[in-house]
Length: 103
Image (cartoon, rainbow, N blue to C red):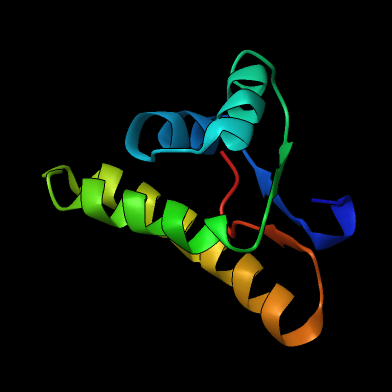
């Protein structure tokens, strides 16, 4: 798929770690996230609009097994950022999103 049909989501290093551990990223996203994990600074994940809600669903499913309030809060912030990126893309054509809390 061409880049004009992709959503770009800005992620912190911690959010990359969370996605790799608690999400089930698809092949393209997994390659990107693994490339990001050892680098400091913000990262920009390119993801097709179809896959973004599926990734959020994976995080929500994983969250049901977690008992740490701190970790649940981090996952909630990440899910909100991903959902906001998807919503912005659907309603305005904007193709980027950013979590409200940077680590």
